[in-house]
Length: 68
Image (cartoon, rainbow, N blue to C red):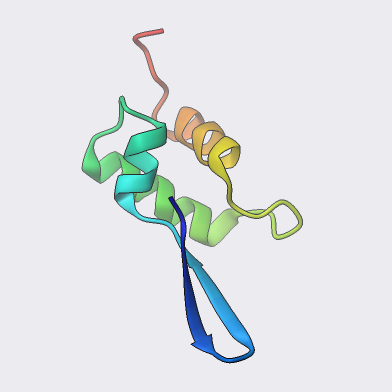
């Protein structure tokens, strides 16, 4: 799951990994999961943030699960 890293006493960073994306979206390859992470980094909505639902939605948009 997203990891919280303390940068300073008054700052944090939430870290999402390729493994996190692949856990939520099992149909993705490692490269596809990395595509999703890069897109989320550049295009996420700061009022919503990044969460499991957003990861799944973005993955479906970029690399649709055709097995469903």
